[in-house]
Image (cartoon, rainbow over all chains, first blue to last red; front, side, top):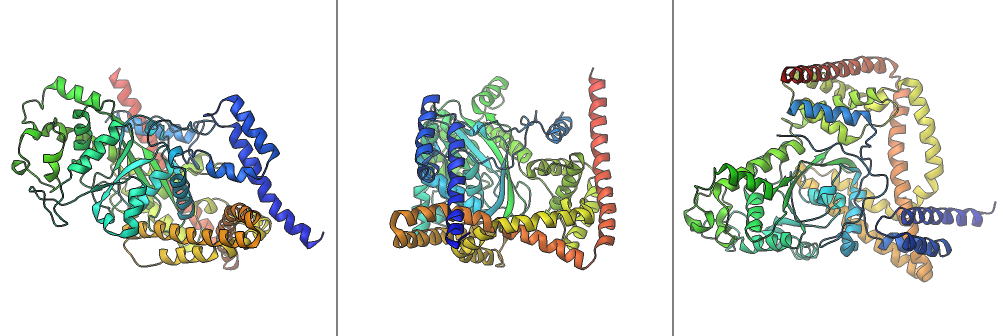
Length: 87
Length: 498
């Protein structure tokens, strides 16, 4: 493989990643109706460079990195302990 | 106290973007900047369910461990832009003044005497109260640190009456549906670069409901109405009441006192409450070891770890656990391991090293790009974190320094991109900048773990691992006993209640 090809691949991969993230984000947005989501997705699908712009200007959502999931039995145990102590 | 907040859970999709005044979508640039600063400064910012702050007039009360860091952490997790109450001294500095005005902060004139004049000038706080009432009236979030000063100890200090007076004043001005929501900020190490933070929302106070209860009990109505008493004749124990003449009257001293007590109680339940940092770290280590043993295949969320650590700290006779966990923590730091690695054994360490090397190789090209693009601001931020400053001062300086350095670096590279190939160059910088930064951080942090593993293998810590495992087992056993005993007592009490 030529060096130029490797560099191009290295640049294209992040663009693809951002494109995929933005498409997934559009489809999961609750503040848009179905038609709006489809329209947004169609634009991003055919114009991938706009994905960067989309991620920069989309309305922010609150950060929930690493938050506890409700199916975690450890969360239920801690809830139970706090309740038991305060009762 | 009643029930704790409901179990924290994450909805399957992203949270709904709230509507109304103060929503982040109207302040996209601010939200982006805050998120970027938080991402750079902390490795992980974990929050429980903060959806209660998404709508309606909300007075947010928080502990104040980390100066400006507290505001940045909260802004990064809240669904709406809060109006932050901050010391008016900040407005004296040219750039800081513009930043505070841009984010909609409200200045508080502290230390005023009854005459309205104080050590920092002659202004009273009537403008501050008016601004808070207007913001609440418009359905916004107002953020106040009711202790008034940054605190070094991992516990809540004296909660002052400001929050109660703002809420009651706004209520008297005709704002209904105000909720006072306590939030606790839990730092792993507030002065460290790339540490972790957990934000916990406490049990909200429904102001209308509380006032109804007070009115029903009739306990406060015999008192003089504060607004009818000249400010100079009122007791002013904390030196903060001089602005009363400018406040919207309509509350009584008893109401303020009761509400302040309630705010303090709820805030104490949400915020860290340890005797000192050694106790906090030891009990958090004990909690982490116990929780990891319950679900060995899952990581331990810092929120759960801190909640269980806080629960242990409130137990009488927790000193035995603290001592054993403190020794275990010292042993961990001596061998350069963390609790997760201590449970792996030597075979696990080898496996981790293999994964680390593989990740390294995959991300290395991007990380090299990250060194070029972000190396200088990253190293400078790290150097700032090594300065010998009080932790609370460092917690203010570090995120501000990171923000300035990274903004300068980003602007520089955008200009370079433009000069290189106009919009295509700008586009490439916009794509490669976050990707290369993420790769650099991931590679550097994995390299750190990898070096630890290598060092342990070179110096042969097989024996130490056995000793560590024994210490760990003792800590987990003590925590387990405490939990079993607490649950048995609760079950017994319930039985008696029937």
